[in-house]
Length: 335
Ligand code: UT7
Image 1 (cartoon, rainbow, N blue to C red):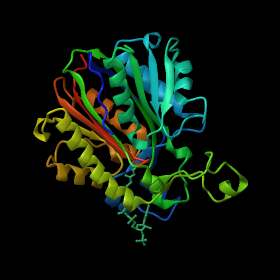
Image 2: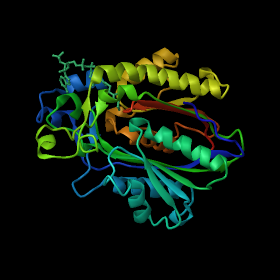
Image 3: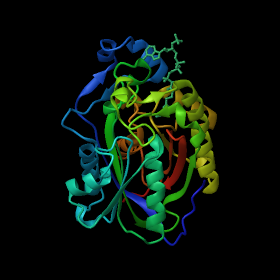
Image 4: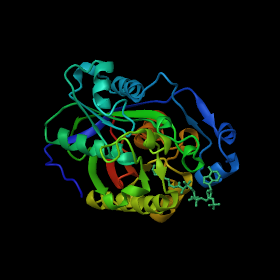
């Protein structure tokens, strides 16, 4: 599916923020936990370290910290927020939503709040939704957050997955702007026939929690790495090309692409296929794969680090469980 908002006004990202836990888990630490090596992890993924939340920290804590930083960056207070959308696969509780925990923690008294579940594409889905709602005049200030504590759902005995993931959160404030500025187009896609390649099998209505599901380790991430890898390259290229076509832009017009940070090899392959070897942003070496948080963490880093400048054409592109994938193209105008 592609989305098209009834365009009455534009919507832009007016502020960004991020938060990662202090604790660093290196590849060398992982060598002591499972049968792996720093060499294998770096060569196959580009990941060198990831952040892990301490036991007393939940997803909404990281989300709230990132949200407050984004609000500060936008020159706003939490009381001014109309809606909070949190993209996550690791909410504090199945219900209430993570967004409601965030609403309480930051004191966003007038805000509506809900979560969306779109795997690692969650932030792109949330941005697209916020764009539509602001463009049609439903809301003036939307807080969009991608936040995860994947360390809670990773099987620390499974070397196929435990070396890949990390914890963190990123946030953006979406506000109205002139038409033709800010978010220009979005493309969202899904293919539920691929649900089995990346899944937590138990804990939902299909397989409620029981002694057996716990003993069989079915509450942890199960991933068929290779099929996901092949899908991911295709998805990144397709979503980027389609969203640019919708916006009447060419790949040469793009200044920066911020892809979901899953694997350095994937990012490089997608860059090669798109013909833009130098335009894909990467911080996967430092944070690993933080699912819905990876794009907003990278976005905040690029914005604060001066990599992203006002007037730049920016593409955000994600892919993940569902299967889901999608892209957004923006004219960056934060000031
Ligand atoms: O954010 C959601 C999207 N997720 C992704 O984008 C992940 C996409 N997939 C990938 O990034 C890659 O498929 C992986 C990094 C997960 C794996 O890399 P690969 O080049 O596809 O390796 P593979 O799965 O084909 O495994 C190759 C070998 C296997 O051994 P055998 O069967 O050939 O003897 C694995 O058992 O590597 C082994 N292996 C490991 N060895 C050392 C798997 N994990 C490890 C490990 N350390 N951590």
